[in-house]
Image (cartoon, rainbow, N blue to C red; front, side, top):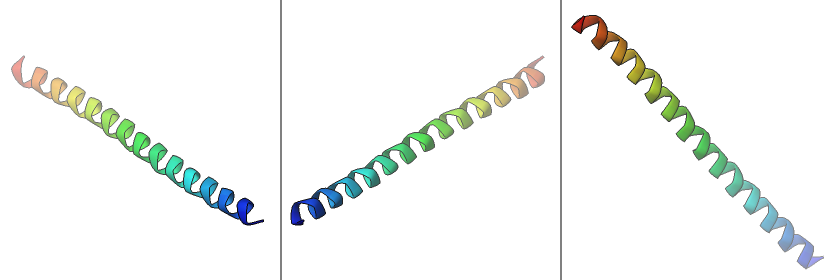
Length: 51
């Protein structure tokens, strides 16, 4: 029973870490997409101002 409890704690820890990592990855992807959109908008603006 004690072993089962420890393994359960380990799985909880791993799921938490997994969630954290996935969250970080999602944030990174979102930030990269946001940057891309901002750069595209900036390019459009610069094109409009230049030409």
